[in-house]
Amino acid sequence: MLLPNQKLAYRVIIIATQYFGYVRIQAGILKQCDRLFIDFQGKTITKIKMNGKIIDPKEVFSHHKIRIPIDFQIPGVLNTYEVAFKNDYSRNGQGLHSFEDSKDHEHYLYTQFASFFANKAFPCFDQPNLKAALRLITIAPSHWSVIGNEYEEADVELDKALDPFRVLEKHNVPQEEIAGLSRVDGGRLKIFRETPKLSTYLYAMIAGPYTVFEEHEPNFPPMRIFVRKTLQHHVKKYAFEFFRVTKKGIQYYQSVFGFPFPFNKYDQIYVPESNWGGMENVGAVTYTENVIIKEGATQQQLTSYANIMLHELAHQWFGDLVTMDWWDGLWLNESFATFISYLCMAKQEGLEKYEGAWKKFNFSKDKAYTEDQLPTTHPIAAKIMDTEEADNIFDGITYEKGASVLKQLYYFMGEETFFDGLKEYIALHQWGNTTLDDLINSFQSASTKRGRNTLWKPWFDLWLTTSGTNELTPEFVLHDHKIANFAIKQQSAPYGDQVPRYQKLVIGLYDSSFALKLFENIYVSNSETTAVPELVGAAEPEAVFLNFGDYAYAKIRLDKKSFEVFRKNLWKLEDSLTRLMVLRSVWDMVCDGLESAARFLEMLREFVRFR
Image 1 (spheres, rainbow, N blue to C red):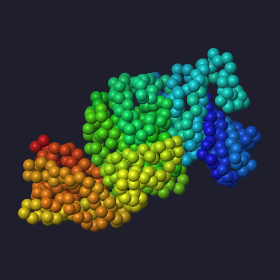
Image 2 (cartoon, rainbow, N blue to C red):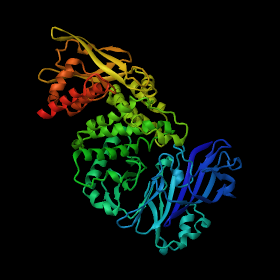
Image 3 (cartoon, rainbow, N blue to C red):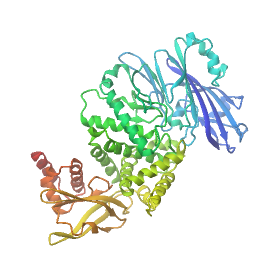
Image 4 (tube, rainbow, N blue to C red):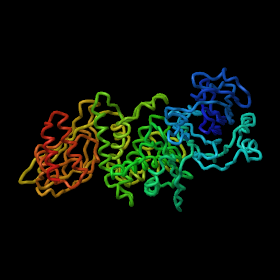
């Protein structure tokens, strides 16, 4: 069993079609184990040393694993494992990917290590709960930029270096592994600062003749944006706005997490042929080039791109500084970044131009509602047995339902308690690994300090370990043009676990002139019917909507009168988010056979006619 304090020194020499490298791992051993191994899905291992002894690779390397014999596992000391290897660049967006620009024929490289792809680039213990410091050393063409998690601390032109061997030996790269160094023409040797302890999936190396835009401002980390030369004119138009959004995000996250930006720099790089929208590598976030705005940007496009930037930025705290212990925490990692990025857009001063944030969030919930009503629905929190399974859990339930439940938690718990819990969580677990229970404990502590006796573990269990969605329907009785009795009926959708859930929501009552009266913090119990005494005595409404502000995760039903009123007067609703949710409710009724598609289309025509 490993102690989580391995130290890596990784050097890669860039050659036309192949690269070779050397990795030195220091690992503390807590207990000897006959199944301890180093992951490597690369091409060839040329040499292995364990605690100074040369080992024949054929004896220990097979099936993408370098087995460490018990004789080379010494408890109580730092064991040293050294591996020299050769590899091919990836062409599938995993490991170290290579790309040739068809316009100027320049080459670009970038890493994509999440979830289990760092070991496709170099030998390592490739799992999130074995955080380690990385010393990255590269040799690349002189005209290339090379970007890592940290800044370089040495930058040497090889044909001018007096003694490059001594430079490398200083960083524990032995001379026998650098014998070919003098044969590299015109390259630059870069030695990067050692990183803090990070999970392997967050390491990064990006290289190529990138164009760079820079921003340096007091009280913010140095920021850079990199893009291929042939695409620079597209990014140049928006670089200032992207830096501005990033700075606003840093201000907001520093406030809600109670922790300064954790790393020494913040680079954002557009990379070609990426399989991901964005990747939160520490200090070196990558984005797919598909998000580059190549024509005049619409407000919707700008909102989408701002959200992607804020999502990856949030991970620098929630995911990078504090990291999940195992892949079954991946849902929380992604759901949280999704939710908090929208909250930042809605709350942070200076981001008012992205006022449609919660509407975009509601659009994304459609994916969750759809997948949650299929026979294949599953709980948010999935059991992940090994690293390869981690790639199979990225869906609308992991991201969008998870984020929706966190928005519900934020409202249910209250903003101050929610942020108190986050600050405690980050303070307690900075630079470490956590499980969901660690977050729940911090929320419980924050809640208790504010005098609340809510037990949050049952709340989380009900939402995270059961599948399917619920339907909420208003039921009320009128007397003398006032509400005499009001209740919310809860039932389950056909697929998934048939369980009612706790919710807290805002009810909107509309009068005949469509003036709105809101009733906030309405509690819905985990039972079939919840009485709502807060509405008793209210004037008879023209229409009722149960989920104003979109805090609940549920299918919202309309009573008959409200349906008819909204069908004819949707255009009178001033709030565009509410209009969207009313349309969603009616569409759900169509899909469930409770209303006709013709009446839905008639509703849309009425809206268009009056708008």
